Image 1 (cartoon, rainbow, N blue to C red):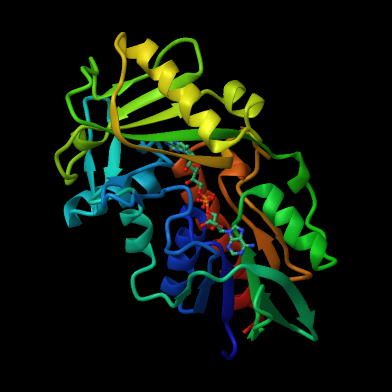
Image 2: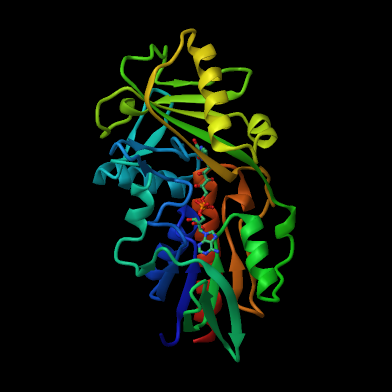
Length: 315
Ligand SMILES: Cc1cc2nc3c(=O)[nH]c(=O)nc-3n(C[C@H](O)[C@H](O)[C@H](O)COP(=O)(O)OP(=O)(O)OC[C@H]3O[C@@H](n4cnc5c(N)ncnc54)[C@H](O)[C@@H]3O)c2cc1C
């Protein structure tokens, strides 16, 4: 890649928003992500029984003008749709759709765990776990959860100030298929207390297949206390807790759990991104502004803005 090439590390909402903004500004962008496909915590899983679940973020809201305009465009394009009465939106057909839309036409290397970034003269190289090196970037934008940004920088002998201040709560997510209607009183339920913080009826979201599928997220304190427990024990405990919430025993056809080590931001940096023009290295993500998809979008766009202004000034 030549002048004006940017490596965006991470293909969640922050990375996708950064990549889109940079492409629109005329830069050559390459996105790298360790996941099987784009989306990050806007995730969807297909179980062995070929059933689909949004097992990460459940929905998003739009508060600011920039994200509102983007949501309106997604709704018009069928990439997102309103869900329920309280100005909530979901991706269609899954929560990954808005991220995929932002990355439309952008080269993405999925299944690529980045283990190092290195400045050689005025250029950056990016190395993955297989030892493959992608050379010749003018700037690097890292959009992982903050502890993973810190780990990459540490392994690369680099520093960006403040990142270590951001903290996350973990979340165990339970995906459940039942043979009968579980009798959930609402499509989205938020119990006040106990191990379960949220229950969603998957098929109530627009564009999903019919069926009695539930996603239940464990509360932050419970997830933290059971973070290293065996999956079977977590699954059994969450099934029992969900039966208590619903007031009857559950007979799942299929059940599985997923552990999100970095799920919801607890302490955000309070600034829209981190960028060091001397290194042409920056970082963005929900951890900059708060535990929301919109915050990740705003942060990614802010970092892209900083990089674009910097590189444009140097042209
Ligand atoms: C269970 C759960 C429920 C949630 N519910 C909601 C909700 O209802 N509403 C809401 O607004 N938000 C919710 N959130 C939060 C929301 O998902 C995040 O705020 C947002 O998606 C963060 O986007 P991001 O781009 O900052 O990070 P991520 O989506 O985490 O993207 C970071 C990307 O970096 C990649 N990565 C990490 N390390 C490496 C590496 N070394 N090499 C290559 N790639 C790497 C990851 O694979 C990932 O794709 C929820 C999150 C979870 C986990």
